Length: 241
Ligand SMILES: C[S@@+](CC[C@H](N)C(=O)[O-])C[C@H]1O[C@@H](n2cnc3c(N)ncnc32)[C@H](O)[C@@H]1O
Image (cartoon, rainbow, N blue to C red; front, side, top):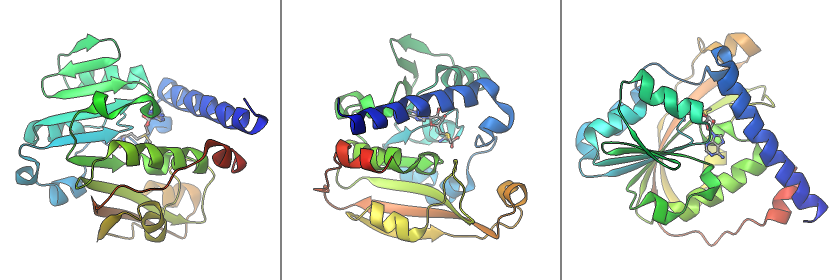
């Protein structure tokens, strides 16, 4: 392993430790978790649009948005690194489940408790919709590039993605990272992007906590048009660390 790749590898280990500690400490360390179903999905992915569809929720945490999808879609697949989050999801929502290795199955809902970067299209099965809320924004730049490359490989042409990001100033060095509509266009060059939500939220908790000058919670409905030829080189990524 070259020194650069070693740096990148160390970053991945640090990232895992960061999320493990967040779920151990809970409280404001897991304040990204919402107690309600996100209003954007009720509006932009209404029940009829989910009929017969398979929904993929990368970096799912214990999001109850998965209950909404499980209710109206045919199949839901989440992936979450930290087992405590997965166990809390089933426990807090009284969903009985069966465990098969790293797969937790409850009716039409499966959560893989593993690293997203180890998932294959065979693991996932057919996917119609990808739902990313607080996932892309959770990752620092080198990890974000790897996440985008993994999503590119896992998302079939024609699939719909609902992406939710926050944009704010001044930027912070920790999650959630600020991601603007311009960044989204750069990250998803092979998608047609409909920018469907962009309210300025002066009362958002982060505005008070970090004395931000503004915060916008963006919503994007995006359709994948073709596979991207972009290949992200691990050595190149390591340069950015
Ligand atoms: C900011 S939280 C968002 C959770 C969820 N999307 C939500 O809206 O509540 C990011 C989640 O991604 C998980 N995570 C981070 N890196 C991951 C990886 N490489 N593979 C799978 N899950 C990961 C973390 O444990 C954490 O639960």
